[in-house]
Length: 208
Length: 288
Image (cartoon, rainbow over all chains, first blue to last red; front, side):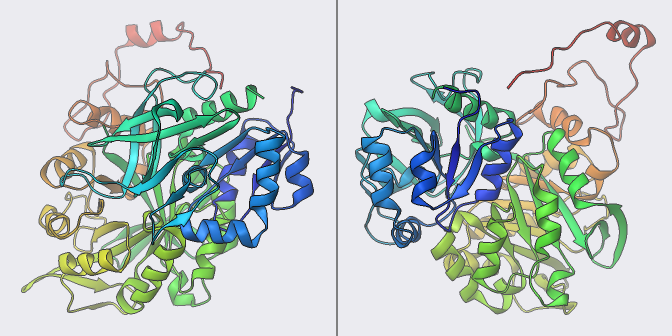
């Protein structure tokens, strides 16, 4: 891959897009765009699907921007690498039970469920937690063992072990990262996890 | 395990970060962008920026100020002040906010808490409550009208949790800017009523106070405004001290393991020999 890949942060109305672009620009990438346009998405080398939002609202927004069709083609057929963040990661699932059952992009098997935790654990999980990963490459290739990241969520992605790339301990094993082929997702916020977050982005962009 | 959070409260008045004392007196500190940049470099876990002049102005959040302030923020940022409509929240998300804090809306327009939670998820909605001690117990204080309401902070927090709030920021009017330590009873009252995380604020002077509130209440986070502003590396130093007793995150390599502190938890100067030796220690800049 060329020195500076073209990165498109998908804008569907509910993401903290400004935070994400700030973090990526900080790493020195220059061809970074926040866009919902088909042409931009199809010409990107890597896609980021950010998210701060409720699942159903995120799905509704994706659809109203006509994004599921475009993304299915670019991600499933053209096999462009994509990184979902927080609710953007949950969108990769079959669906979520947040505010009633809603279907997701259905790219990675599994469902998004409310965190069912022992009573002493606050929900949502808010704060910095260490993660354990099964596979270092490519997302965690530059971080230390058991790095910490910032989490802020009430629901998590229950998926098959082979797709669960990382987890954190919060009374139960909470899915922290998922992967299937060129499709990646992280429950935490790398754009808000200081050095560890920037290292994760670097690992992802270096792999393309 | 999830770590306890050390967060910074930036109180902004007319575009300038101020030191707030007792909700009455405000001393200028500096530009929000610079405060945020430094707190980031010193490894703060989270920043809460509250614009106390926005609601009084009545024309929504100061988006320009916020956009300028957030460019060098790589930790979670909560923005509060002047939010009266979900469109304000949408706009704030494009200005670098990750969460929003509601105070007046929680008191007088609870449906905004619910609406915000339905769109952005409850994890995005922080309700900020100002508590004050009265002869009849704690009450919620309305900073804008400067009056004591009939709500009890604990049950009020519970009401906002039911409405969709995902986190409570409890501030003590009595302790604000006092350096007397957190109001542990107030924090405990709120924690006892909710399942969502609670951020304690108001009165912190140093790491000892933060350790106190994190050990003796169920608060998930200890927040401070004033004292972080006035010492170089205040955040690293405070967290290094707290880390001896509690699990907190250190962002930088500086863990101050070989330093000693005075009674006020201020750093004591190292010996001349040690300092001379340090001149020749080479620290590689970490490559990301």
